Amino acid sequence: MTNGPLLVIEDLVMSFGGLTALMNIQLRVARGTIKAVIGPNGAGKTTLFNIITGVLSPTEGHIHFTGRAISGLKAHQIAALGISRTFQTVELFTNMTVLENVMVGRHLRINSSFFGCGLALPHIRRQERRLRAQAMEILDFIGLADKSRLLAENLPLGERKILEIGRALATDPLLLCLDEPAAGLNETETEAAARLIQAIKEQGITVLLVEHDMKVIMNISDEITVLNYGEKIAEGTPVHIQNHPQVIEAYLGDGTII
Amino acid sequence: MLQIRKAPIAAGMLFILIFPWAADRIPGIDHYPDVMIFAGIYCLITIGLSLLMGYAGQISLGHAAFYGIGAYVSGILTTRYGFDPWLCMPIGALAAAAVAVAVGAPSLRLRGHYLAMATLAFGVIVNIFFREQRQWTGGPDGMTGIPGLSLFSFEFDSILSYYYLVWGIVAAAFFFTIALIQSPVGRALRAIHTSEPAAAAMGIPIARYKIFVFAFSAMLASLAGSLYAHYMNFINPGTFDLFFSIKLVIMMALGGMHSIWGALVGAVLVAFLSLEWLHFFEQFEILIYGAILLLVTIFLPEGLAGLPAKLLERARRPS
Image (cartoon, each protein chain N blue to C red):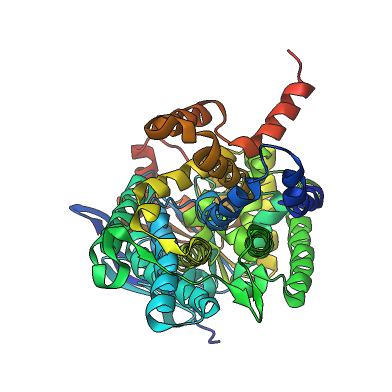
């Protein structure tokens, strides 16, 4: 491993037909930091996430992760390299239990041979017990251990978002991409989410964050990048961003007040 | 947590074991073990379909083709090349799997109705192949003289011995599949069914899983076809036509797509309906299937397998 940035995005362009969603984006995420990407609705934040995680292929540009080119790889290949994510619209496995959701998150780290599983070979059974224990540890960490047997769809939104983070953590990521972890949460839930994100950083996991809640952003991010209409208009520390005239204009123009 | 309960399995096994003995003692149904052989053959197909449709969420309207591939591989290799029937089963299964991978790789990218149409077209094409390739398949007349199965000097030529052979294989497929469902593979399949983006983000190679399950279900269908051919000693293309693919879907819908129990219940019921109880209606049979499919989808979307839970819920909330 080098000491360079974990994620480097260079000259990234994404267009859908005639619409350019991202224009010439440069982005670096340093190891062990929390980096936030903010911007008004439609600024291209989720598109950026979808490109980093392999859901979309960029029109132009390069993405390097731990020094390796990853643009054009499929989503599951990128997950295997150590990038995990949550979704803005919460994509849990609703018909599975809380515990099972986290167990699916371990998929990359386990043996899932078709015939080994079908024949219930001893090593698969041992693995299943180990897997359960590991998943419980993660549930302990995110504070959902007592709900392990509930179906994911029966959790309130706040806990669903937390569970999604736990499921992503189960992949043992180097980089965790969180798409609006506080959206739709009340104040208490938002605080819990922010504390969790900081605890994740303390474990040495780098976090890339898209968020609208300015209080969360300003409190926990090390560096912020601001997008507007697909372009990067500012970058820097929270204090720097808060006083950046273009940022204020972009948000006031949108009717939102920081 | 998805847990397959042990008590129903034990009850089911006991039922299968003593069924021929019991049927023999009840007047009027002493020929039911013969019907149960076909039911077992159908079960083999629906177990695979349950994994494909119920767990992985992919629709197939072409599984009669894989059933036919197994039957014709067994028929052709034994009658024309003198192959041992036991050897034909794995060969047929591998052939079906190869065809499934070739067909599945492009068509599993499709979803919903498009996938249904692609598999339906595939089934029709294979059936035309069975009908037209006379020098291989005997054309519309089919092929005769397919040998029965024997092990060392034991011949599986009685209904009873074939019954236990078929249901033994069904049990093996059943236990394999329930182990699979409760393993990381089963969770991955259910994950794909609920959210493909999230499954991919967890590192699950979606395309590979879909193709694997498609191929596995094709292998089971092919095995069923081989068992059919060696039991009947005669096959013709009509057995493996579009109507049979649709019958398979009726079995799945009637029993319940989302449960392996549903696959078994549906297969057994449709076997008895088509071979016994609806015989009387002759050409109106298809109308009755239509009505069953309609009623089940409206009143029992979870199929018969969902009935116990539904009744239990109703009993708890009397109003």
